Length: 467
Ligand SMILES: *Cc1c(COP(=O)(O)O)cnc(C)c1O
Image (tube, rainbow, N blue to C red; front, side, top):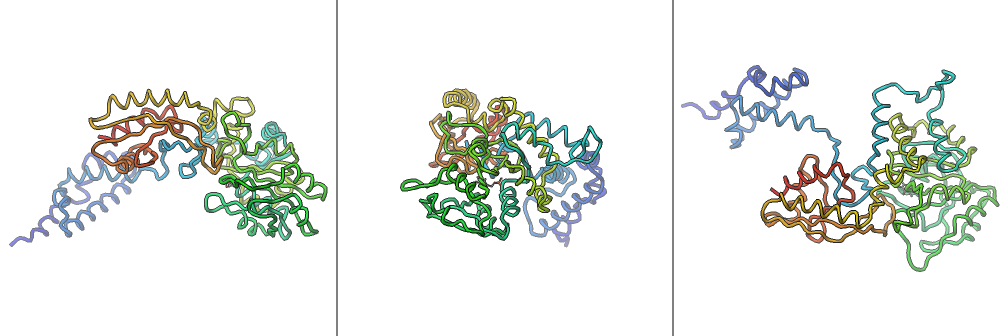
């Protein structure tokens, strides 16, 4: 008697036969024979294993046409990039898990022009001599911040590390106990400080630190006074923290530098949007901080990078640190960062930089946009779907403004047939994936963080997830 398993295994086509199928031919033209052959071999092997396990789907799928269709799916999945654009419908403007700041059109154009061609990254076009990449943006940063000198590094963590390693290795750094920050789980100031070779000298208490605490801690071992912005938390109630100006006076009266980690790279006053308490880079320098450091992909709205800015003698010492090489950034970052900073220089930051545009959208503007979108969605959504506009709050995120929400209108989307969790999950499975907010058992869409050009994709994705 014929063994049915052996019979089915025999029906599986050979690789050569599969290579003549339309999908295989198409992908061979787009990729290479070797790639297509190896994927076919894997598919056939998986089919054999499935048959042995008596998987019902495999039983049907052994003819060349069915296998060719499976191959199409397989290639599409294989070539799906690991890093993909997503629609951020969470209302969290600087979502670290979603890559923080989306770049401005100008920054994107610059990226594309400097990426596929040679550039003058370290070449002086006037003299024809070698130059230094870390001089490229110095004039622009000086014009915006009013600083003597600056250097661009990989991120703010690298900036803090380099400053401490250069100016304080083997000596003491005085920091308030209220400012021993942890940002995003992996940036812990005491750990970075220890690795830099500096010695932490904590002063004051969690809630109260006075200028006298700093003063009493200064010894011949002191290298600098350090101030960190508590980006992602606030200490409320019975609190005290020295003013930056007091720290500057104290440091300078003892011939010590005052270094401030300002965090988010806030270059402009955002007070009119209800966002206060974030140190503004130029103001810190004007008040007398000798060096400041900040991220470029948070409020600044640029690519991942860190900037150290301030007094030339300290910046040149940092440039000479061999670890500078470890922290340097590449041409793509210089290109995108320069284009972003130019928006500040030309006074067009609020119009051109997506993060600042999102922050400056008024509650009224969001409401109008949400209602229009809700009507479009309502008109096409399947039976049993409800879309309601509700008042909510968007947040800055990325460790900025921990207790400031921006008033917004969110769309609560519900469907008689699916739970909010199911809808949220199906939204993530769309192409492009949509990341929504789940709150009080509702799926919420906040259009503040959806770029206007993504609205069609959002509508399509929502309809896909609801049907
Ligand atoms: C975000 C932040 C950091 C870390 O910056 P990265 O650019 O993410 O490395 C350090 N210090 C403060 C105060 C911050 O807000």
